[in-house]
Length: 242
Image (cartoon, rainbow, N blue to C red):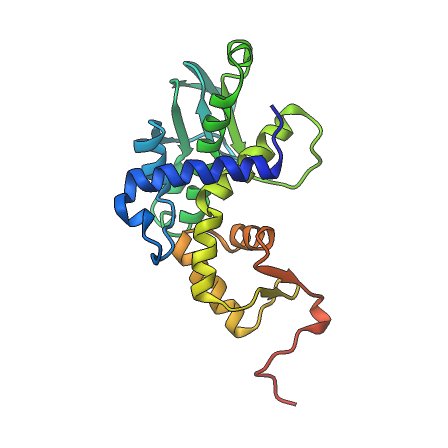
C-alpha cells in the first residue's frame, strides 16, 4: 500500500481528532483552546492498545525501535553471540538507551518520535487488505537511525510513510496552526540553519511545547508553510557591531 502525503495527513488528522476527544474530553472541542501536544505514550498504550517495553536492540544503537504485527522473535547478534527476544503481536520495543541514566531528558524527543513511528506502522498495517496481512512475511518492523535515501523498495516506502505519519501524529496540522497563531505572526526564516533571535526563540518554544527535536520541528513547519529557507548570505545578525 503506497499512500500520498495528503492521504497520510488525512489519516493523522482523523486519528488525532478521535484520540483528543478520547483523552482530553470536552477540552478538545473548545473553539478558543490552546494547542494540544500529542501524549504519545498514552496514544500508544491507551488508544492503540500497544504494549511498550525497552531492551537492547543492536550493538551499535542503529535500531531505535521495533514493533510486531504477529508473535515472532527478534534476534540480536553481538560479539558473536546471538540473543533472542520474544516479540508479541501489538508490542513495541524501544532501545534501552532511551531510559539509561542521563539519557531520559536528552533523548526524550528522539524516543517520542521513535514511538510515533512505530505507532504509524501499526496504523498503516491495519489499513492493509486482509490478503496483504495474511501474506505479510515481515512480522516486525524495525526503525533504524534515519538517513536520507531514495525510495526504491517496499521497505523504503514503508519507512517513509511511517516517518510522515508519525510526524503528523506528533505534530497534527490543527495543533501546529494553533501554536503558530500564538507564537509567530509570520513564517520563520531558516538561513541554512541560522535564525534571527525571535525566530530561534519561537522554534525553541515550539519544540518544548510538542516535545520534538529541532530537526523534526523544522521539517514539519516547512511542510505546513510556517518556515521558509533563505541563503546564509542574506542573514544579518542584529547584534553585530560594525
